[in-house]
Image (cartoon, rainbow over all chains, first blue to last red; front, top):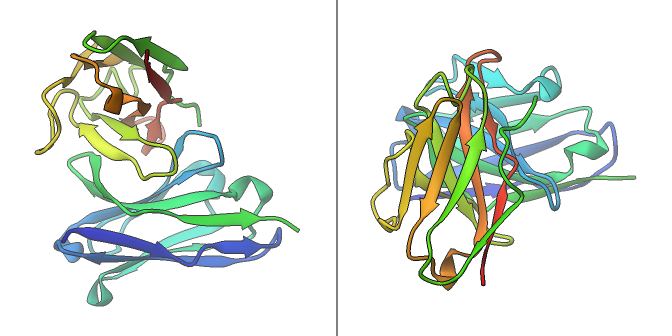
Length: 117
Length: 111
C-alpha cells in the first residue's frame, strides 16, 4: 500500500525546536521528490519546502528560510523537517507529500504542531 | 508570498455543473501548465483531483475537469453530487520565487 505517515508533532514553546518525520512505503522513495505543506487552523494550504531525490537540492518558502531544514534518509525511506526558532504563526497541521510531475500525488494524514507558551 | 485567488464559496444543486476559478499571474498560472487541483474534506488530507491543468489521476471521476485561459485556471465539477461538498485548492509553480503556491481555497456547497 502506498502510504506516508507523519509523526513528531506536539506542543512547543515559542523559540523552541521540533523535528517532524514522514515514513514512506509502497513506492520508490529514493526516486521521488518530497514536500512539506502546512495548514494553519481554519486556513488554507501553504507550501513549506521541497527536496530532490538525493537531498542535494532544497527549496523553501521565504518565511521559513533559515529556521526550517528539510532533509531525508533514503536508506530508511524517511523525510524530515527540522523546525527551529518556532513562532506562534507556525502553528499548523504539517503534511508530507510526494512531489511528481509538478504536483503532489500522495499525502500523509498530517501531524499537528502547536507553538504556544 | 501571495496566494492564488479563488472564490471563497461556490454552491450548486445536485446534478448541476459548477466552476471554480484560480487567478494568478504570468509568473505562475499564466506562465506554466503546472496547475493542480486538490479536494479536502474537514480534518482530512488533501486529495489530488487534477494535475497539469487538465489531467485526471487514475480513480478520479470524469465529472471533474480542468482548464486554463491566460492567468486563470478553472475546475469544473459536472453532475454535482452530495459527496463533492468539500474545500478545493488550486496550486501552481511560481517562477519568480522558485516556489510553489496554493490558492486561497473554495468551499463547495451542494444545496
